[in-house]
Image (tube, rainbow, N blue to C red; front, side, top):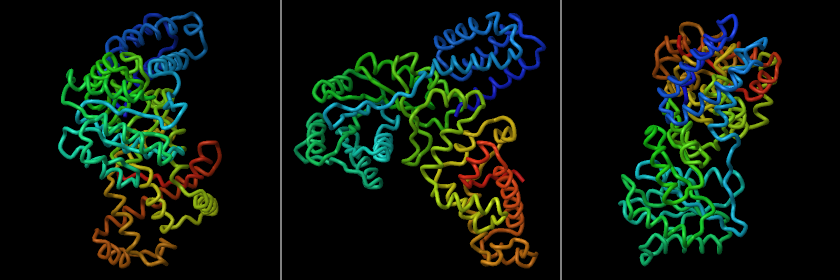
Length: 451
């Protein structure tokens, strides 16, 4: 996410660093480039205007122009302005004083409401809550069945309703009653959508709001639709009064204009972002971390949190010991790949890495998820002795391994090369420094599959 905008802003900062001194003239030129980068990223024009004016007032101050490192000062100012636009602080879900907390999930048809309802339920359950989900979409064929399938896959309680309950309000009231009786502290209501906003839809949502008194009304927007998502969110807020936004498909949005515009236009915070198809691909939105990613600084904190949630601590400590003692085998390499797949799409993880210093080349990395399956198959075709000591794998063994895994000798050769690179890189990560120690603790294999 934000890849296109990030690349353009980094080019602007590179040009600023190339200037011997920072003047009003070259700062104005930089601001012009930043303005174009934001507009091309589909950021709302009012947001761009306010953003540029805020940066201009601070960047053209005498303190910046005469500072020892004006380029760094400008980057800091841009970062602070980005955080201000995105929301300054994370906005958490509010809970009712008397449970259950009622959360309405609203939005246009096709935006991802039903899937987001399931993702949010899983997110909340991992945070210690006990959610109950219910669909009140009585119009779209199989809409309620879709949520039932998701709830079953997540092993999440669902209120399915009775044949007599054919109205959205009846279903929602019964679901809340069910939550009260079964000790569920949150009720997530997946509401009906339309292809466009109409009075009938809004009247139905208004009736639900007035009778259920929800603590949160979350608007689900598709990041891929850019400013259309922002306009829809604004219209929903004017007519219904939303309290926050879930922006889906952020993993596929290279521009990021919706994320940068939605809070300014609606006045409501971006609370969650969807970063993939899996049910655990929903993250709380952190403005400062998003700003860091836009500026190429990465989001190492989110990366660490994701790893710590999915990686076994004891195994991580054992892997760190093996790395230090140079005992990292192909068997360990295979186990790391399996652990890595639990963290989600690799391109999302790479997007969290800083695009500077020793990791700057990651911005051009392309990841083939099928490659992981192929690597595991190759290692599975090796004998225990070969996995323990890769130096045993001569030409004849490579041909046997290729045949057994349904791959080629070249694939086997590439794997051994990647393994050697991963072993060397992970060894270097244990050499000191905060990031190195934390990443070594995560025991993740980074490898270049570019050949």
